[in-house]
Image (cartoon, rainbow, N blue to C red):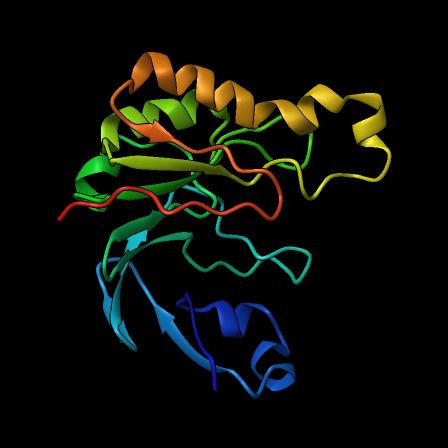
Amino acid sequence: GTRVLLPRGAARSVPGLTRRLSHLRFTEVGPGEEVPVGDVVVRVVRALHDGRRLPMGPQHSPALGYVVHGEARTYFAGDTGLFDSMAAEVGDVDVALLPVGGWGPYLGHGHLDAGRAAEALARIAPRSAIPVHYGTYWPIGMDAVRPHEFHAPGHEFVRHAARLAPKVAVHRLAHGESVLPEVSG
């Protein structure tokens, strides 16, 4: 019965998704929509990322981010690149979860590296930020060959954020750690 919000068209783009996971409640959403889920409201925002759903085929569904409104307003950017209207579309948030890396040595269009994520952070200006999307999914053996690309994005984000958004509390968490970021009252 768990509620899953996914981009409009994703169920069609990924054959078998709803059939194999029939115990989940899927709701397809698009930018601008708000969906109540229990005690929170999830506002769907645009992300700048390739909408292809590979390896399933060339189907497209929009890339999305989510702003969860509850005791705090938390922005989960998803996979995205930096875009001009990002701050306006995200709005006022307490916490931003920003991707700062990826799974390969080069992050192209539609992705944030540590520097671009810090630029996004400066534009959004939340109270707190947590770098995500680095140091977990990596081609086997790559961490032994190029460990700096595997582990460094979190540290680099902290460094860039201190320069570009010094008023934002940045929490770089190790695997399994948690934090209760400061939220507006």
